[in-house]
Length: 186
Image (cartoon, rainbow, N blue to C red; front, side, top):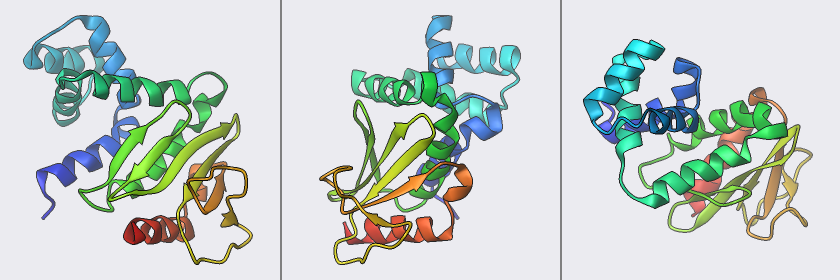
């Protein structure tokens, strides 16, 4: 049976699919409501937005988490997938589904232009590079490049390889295996 942390991670990865909005969008909405109590936020999400109780509870917990670092992280990811890059959010969401299942020790560290994937050390990154493509950088030392798993070159010196993703469907079994391999090597 999954732990509460694993269940929360799975729910976080599925927020957009199940509620129609990304977590950053829900957090912005709850902040704008100026509600300060957990129960008030849950009631507002359920009543005004037809969010199920489980997701309303999760969103309320996330909204009330203390610490500016969490808010800054959320804002950084929201900024990455805004404007011309808003259509790339489903690719990021699909990658999160895979990454959050790797283990409890996975840390997502959003930066201005990308999200660093860390364990004991960085094992990868997710970057919306163009208006039509997300680049997945991975540390796979000793792995030969292929047509899809290319050498990172000038893409990012923190990664050995890059995979170009233009659709959530591109996050296939091969990509999942490369992510797991990079995670296990970190």
